[in-house]
Length: 284
Image (cartoon, rainbow, N blue to C red; front, side):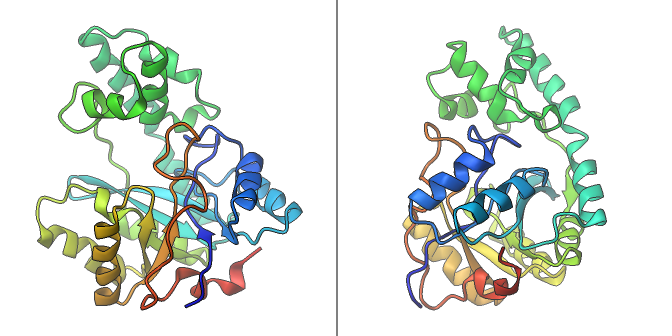
């Protein structure tokens, strides 16, 4: 398989990134990305801007989003690629998924207030361009600004993960719904950064992959900013075992926060079918 620098997972100011779709497009192009997708959380309102910016740079582009899914007691993310970003059922599904974020954010802020950190909801709003998509990342940026923690990683470790005082679970879309919205809109569904999920055992992870494929999912993110080389190798084997294509995306959010920059990932294992082979007809 020839070396191909696709980056099919990143976030803009439309969700929880710090750069606009236009600036991300320019950064991807400058970093040698040959196929790009913007995958904002539960939102596609930045897609036309990304398409236009990529076109102006002669940068091949696939539409994208990252949908939050409840699977057993975990939140799992499903990336959609190459879909019609105006598809009514997809838009309605994403709107329903977004609708619980504000209530969750208020509850998170109340929990932090109880441990002596007031004003976090109002502080986080300063970092939000779309209030429907207020997230833990916005809380983390404010807590760093306020001097509570030295960086966003420390915020998540101390306050915003399961069992910590600012963590509030949320019921997202079902796995079947998320995959169906993507597939019915003409796209391909991808399990995002699979090593990040704290499955209690291998059986539950196997169930995720099995159910995902049964619903029509076709790919898994093998290379991503949070995967070690050992994890990339592990999920390359899972892709082969389940007959899934492989995706590659930095999960870039911000120059100061992300594990790796746009376009900086290693090459996919040559045994794997790249997800972009399934989407050649969907490239803008």
